[in-house]
View 1: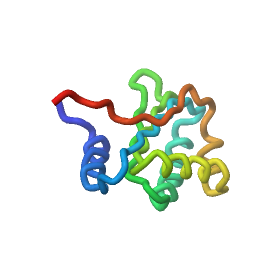
View 2 (view 1 turned 135 degrees about the vertical axis):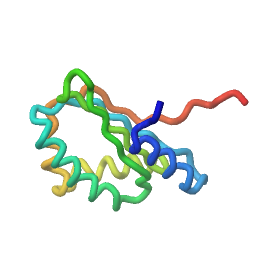
View 3 (view 1 turned 180 degrees about the vertical axis):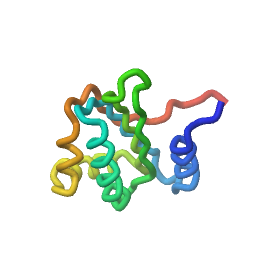
Length: 118
C-alpha cells in the first residue's frame, strides 16, 4: 500500500533534520463547520507556520466518512519549539482566520515516538 505523499514527505523531512533533539509530533483532532473555508485558511496558516523555528512538516487527514472531521499532524524538531510555536499561533493575528475556521477541538497533544526493540 502506498502512503500519501504528505506522510512520506514528513518522514523524509524528519530524516534530514538534525538529530540533536527528539522530534515532537503535535496531533490535533478537530471539526470544521465549513470544510472549504477551513482548507483555505489552513493553507494560509501553513505558509506562516513553515517560517517558525523548528518546523519540520504538516499534514492534514480528513475523515473518510465525515469531511468535517480533521486530524492535523505537525512535526517539530523539539518539544520546546512546538510549545513556542503553539503560543505564537494562539496570539499572532495571522492565524486568527484559521483558528476561527475550527468549530471544535476534540483532542490535542504532543507526542514522541515509542522506543522500538532492536
